[in-house]
Length: 236
Length: 292
Image (cartoon, rainbow over all chains, first blue to last red; front, side, top):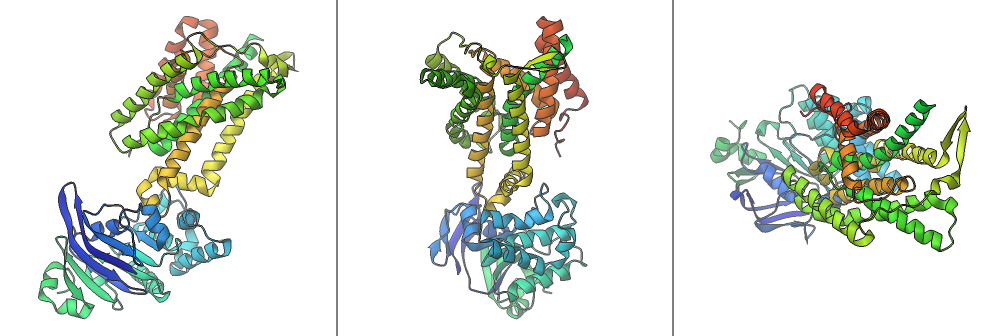
């Protein structure tokens, strides 16, 4: 469903991504692994249309996404939860989560079902729906950020470092949520710098280093690869 | 008696000032642009409103329709905001100085356009507010037209609150103001929201100008005179705050009325003395937010 073909991205004249090729198929969980600064976030933001491509293309079900503004990429069915969560502080938890039903409207019953599914993935959110976005802990913000992307009803979810900076107590909750999303049949492209956080059921792993993909394979193959062990923490 | 008249004049002035500064605040709140053209839009609304009502009267229109005709003409004149926003779009995200210079260029251009279309002489509609008569309460008489303008400002304040705080569109606008990149990644067409907000803000300015024309002459001095008061309102109320615009407009309106009554030569000084005090004591205004 998503094809990244020979994508290169420059930021302020510096080459950040070089000739990236990557596919995500229906229901797959693909994990981008790499050190901080390797280019994971740049790739996710380029897919979302937030960064322009110097060369190459991003395609969604065969049609070009490259050059589309981010709101049209989102409306095609790609949800995005950024590393810093970026929950709207001026809105409540409920308003943050309902956001996607306003920007990608659907008949009332369908919109309600989308929001209901977001709360199903993270049931704890129902206990503080009226709380303001500025009053949340890091883990709560992360749940809201992922639930908010889900309420957009995406077929593909881009998760940037979903476990980064979270306390060990909240990590199982986020992991369980991601497992629920996977069980619903949605595809996920997840960026992660710590391999220990990658779930066992991940379909494939792509290791990115200095803007290039240097390894593709299963989690077990990644763990056995000496080059991957050098660049990704948590493998040793 | 004089105190009640003074207070009434102050509140009428505050109502018009609120409409214009609410537009200014709305645009700053979402687009972070200090829109100097607010004064020019106010003058455009006044001139355009005068012309539209003259045309309406020449067609045999009833003077009793003064208020709705002026409001409609103001809404129509505010569509010029589409053109201004299209040009301003080129400087979004650039240094504030570019944005300020761009809106100042519009102020100067508007001045020539107003002079070219309506001439250099002030334009007066005559004693039209009298068609609505006066209202006698407890020995005092108030022009009904002025009361209707104050009521209109209150209705606008209520509608703005409802739009921003209670509707899904308002939530998207607030989210866009806070983090446009994230709102866009969640499907919000931020370009369209920026246009919508700018045109809405422009319409508030032109409606304010149109409503004031039956009580004062439209003139080429209007933009500067208004902007002097509007910035005082913004500083006192807090940049970007609609609530601040409401309270700030009342404070400036009362200050202006008091100084015009007792020290007419010191009108601007008395207002800006308060502005300086606010800047020193509470630099982000009564309802503004301190920079993080």
